[in-house]
Length: 219
Ligand code: ADP
Ligand code: ADP
Image (cartoon, rainbow, N blue to C red; front, side, top):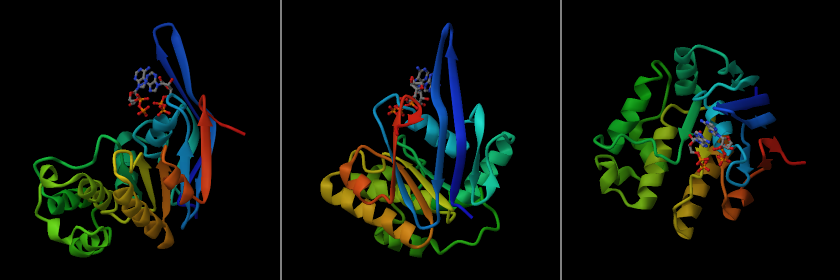
């Protein structure tokens, strides 16, 4: 079963007279153990693609499956359930609640996936190198720590696929390497990883690179 299988996605936006075709027949497959990098200029459809893959937006055409389960074209509550159990999402806006500690952010993420067996929080934090920061609030973390805390929350429910929009966008070289190593470990453990990135370093760790342009995969 593919970690992620998206077929022939279309997404139109209409604003007054103007119609934008943000996605025009995009297919993406992420196998277990694979890292996929989506690259492309601003406006090429990367954010729209991630939103559709995560079930945060509905494509107008095409189908998205995660771990074999369909997430597209279902009621919002069903999409949220599949997302919580099968997808880790790391958006640029961040995924941490400001007034909760790192540990409580992970606990909160887990409430959305009842019954799913997951590793100890201490173990998860150990993996991302934040064992000593469990009780810290997001605002108390340095940039690299914040990125890793976001990653721990995205991985809280042991997702089939991790979707990350510019996960290393604002990090220095050394911190970027550290985050990329964690993504690589995640894939090595047999999970899917998809990142939107402008970073050559991040592209280098990818098994498959998807170049988007004007809502299409450039051939
Ligand atoms: P990228 O992430 O590659 O910069 P986006 O997915 O944000 O690209 O945008 C792709 C195209 O779709 C752009 O032309 C953008 O202006 C348009 N678009 C994205 N979201 C909306 C929206 N909610 N309403 C109207 N147009 C949108
Ligand atoms: P990025 O290029 O960093 O991916 P964008 O500026 O393209 O970010 O988009 C940021 C947000 O704004 C997205 O949620 C996208 O859906 C929305 N958006 C982008 N273009 C438009 C637009 N023309 N009209 C309305 N919303 C838009």
